[in-house]
Image 1 (cartoon, rainbow, N blue to C red):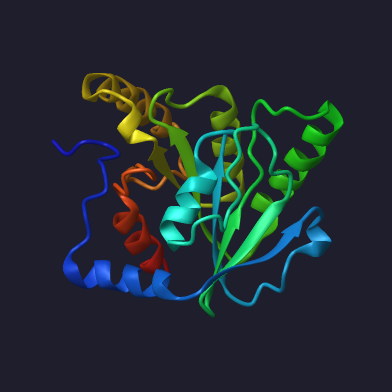
Image 2 (spheres, rainbow, N blue to C red):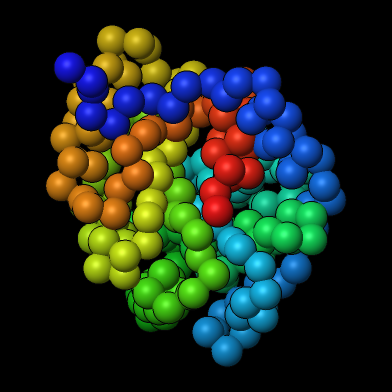
Length: 216
């Protein structure tokens, strides 16, 4: 019997090359958006990255693009309060969404950017897939469930990306993965594969590049 939500396998040579070529193109910061009116023209496909504060989102984007410091990593949870757009070559936007959950910011500020996050996920026609990042040490939390439920209601396909896999022992990771698979099974918009990554070690980066390159 096939496991529900298996780990994505490493791509074959041709698929890996497609991903490599996509991310060999120039990666540039385009703009930070604080209101829906500020979104760039919807003239190309885009994928977005969502996750709790300090899940390693900036580090993963930097690893994907091979551009150190492209997305600003911070030890201060909730520092990124904008929807940050990056161009990946001429045909793709990478979108770094504001971290959700605990944030070292005033409640009114937190509410404002979380409202923006929800409006974006519900209304962006060119959004092809959301990647929901989950810390391999902690699994899926209530705030992750809330974003996943929103993606379900918006009919936006989302794929779970486990981060910081190098920070957890194999036996502990197995327990976390059981919890993650159980949680994902309750979400109709969940893509039926999980990507296991480590930005520090580079694990899973080629796989994720190939997945993004293969999205129609």
